[in-house]
Length: 482
Ligand code: PLP
Image (cartoon, rainbow, N blue to C red; front, side, top):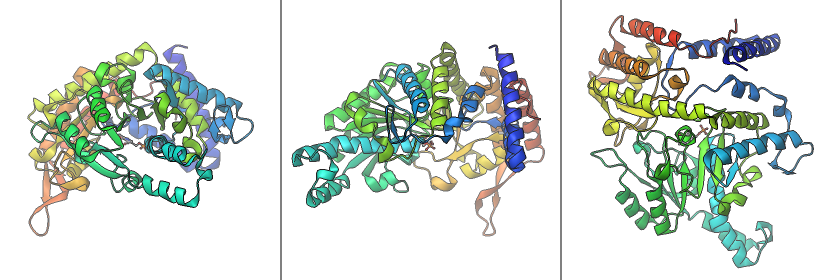
């Protein structure tokens, strides 16, 4: 199929689907149409979002959704799962081949679920299995009440070392508001206060002192590459399981932008990811593991997960097949190059960015130089048609709610066809908005952390310039829903 007639076929499929939905609940059809219009009309710089292909989106709208399939391929708790077995096997095979991993588990419904599966698989392998062996038991049901209580107490004593939240780490890496922080004693490693870069000596020192069961690497707001070989050495030295959450940068691993020491797969015991960010698939997660952890990960359902979303596994198979094509490597290289252009475009216009640059898909802009909080910058940019999200910067004086930063990512606009010139123009538009925005004054006379005002006409002017860029790089060209 050529791209043009593929788009025409997708267009027909979507139009028909929306007509069917409209006949039952027109407001859902209207919201779906409106979402496409909104996404078409804004500069999407949210680093964790992307645009999946029509094939991926259509694969999710299928009869596979109606099937229960708890268990794993060939070992289901339900009858009649042969088609689910097919799509799950295909998704797992594509994942193994794409990432060069001996084992892939494609059932997690999201990144959080993938991490939970990984945590329990590590606990099962490192804590439960030795306890069962010591008690001469085949499974937890064989344990006496006393042994069971001892095992439960041991689960609660385990430690995790992960990246600090304000250095770019993720809530699911042992932080208290997330269940991982309630499961594990957690300590975090930060970044060098001067350079903003990961300091491996500090990570090693923290690991030696804390002796974690799990050393976790991975981030959602760190704009640099990580040397996973070095992290594995640290994990080995203290006997920790090395886990990498590559949710954000899986597309750069798949597209071979990250290779050697920067590819987590050969170095980690367990790797988790989402499938919907830079990987450009459906919303969901997956886990890759070495043979040692594979059996435990395979028990993710029913240990942590309910019945798999079979239609989403089908869409994962489609997305992973796409990511195995040579074009995806070109895409991933462009994502990294475009993030660099964005970073350089901001710096040359006197903006401050954390670490002074980027070598992945995201840029962390410190907006304190504009006299704004992240919350204000996010609002002002949104009013001008630029969608971003506020984010803490290292040692953030404004905390995690108001923040002092804005996170900007290149994956979505690169999918739309934006290149060097467009990203430089995007940097210009971002600076234009922020440099014409001022914090309002509260009743007590201090600067507000929430309210702000952008000089008259700026938002309209920026929105018009953004529209020119967007019109020249249409989203889902040929897809007409009206
Ligand atoms: N891990 C990392 C590093 C993330 O950035 C995210 C999402 O932001 C997640 C996990 C959770 O993913 P999900 O929202 O699919 O649960």
